[in-house]
View 1 (cartoon, one colour):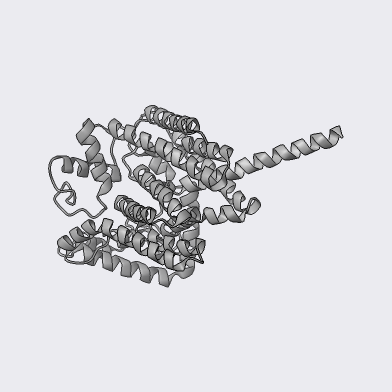
View 2: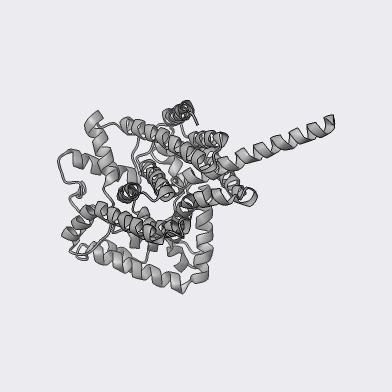
Length: 425
């Protein structure tokens, strides 16, 4: 595929993202965006990266606030500066998506389609103009995918070391990636079953590079909490809150997303966050084991929301817009249904890729994409599940959807040609 195609895809992507952000600007910071902004300003003011603006220790991974702080330091404190950089990152992501599509399927049309799909993916357009970590996370994850694809292709040490470093960086943006290496390692032996010794050596290099990247943050956690904390101390609370509905009887409504006892415990300054996290994990596991069938039912509906964004997307879209702004009630709901419809169509196309166009060589080469999709689906349907969490996954769904559509168009063209030839004969 020529360089000009990648340039066009890049330009189309940044244009669509810039237009959407310009038409629907977000002048107000709310929820996580406000916290990220405050922490970034705290870093600019000369405070340590691991301490929050209010003086307590940082519970979330530090790279997104550091990313914002770097933009503020270079270009000044303006949300538009962040949006411009994030829009630029979406352009780079589109290039990697097209590149990987072409490498896996050797189809120029599929590669172009994947870039175009991504450039008009409404969920991506929405998040380019929000101070959420999803765009940076998607960027780091696609860089990791690019690296690990080449690592699995030729079992070269440099690619495995780079992959370990990149997945460490990705985990420092969002902790949801912290267990992904455990799912990547079996893929090495699946793709290269006859090179077990070489695969083992590459696994060691990959793991060491990953752990070395995480070591400074692990050391920081041990220094502050006097306990081993791999990345974050919010996993237990997220697991409990996201499944608390298991304890609520049908038809009953509750204001809190946890019991009164746990709510009091969560704000008790005499209990360390390490102990709080452990207690939340214990209570969440007890709750899940107590209601296994309800958990399956809940996970099913979580997965629908994860892939379509039909329920929670309304809240995400409206974040940051003051009353009476450009986003009206009608526009907001229209965007919700467009996002849900677009995501559903892409998902159906991707599924069709495996039903109608199974080719062994392509299936093996695309194993890494399936692994990443499966991993994040599992993580978020068990734990916290929001529409925005699926944004990184759609980079890979788009790859399969583009290949499915390209092959369908080719098949229809051949059928049409055959019918015309038969008629002429």
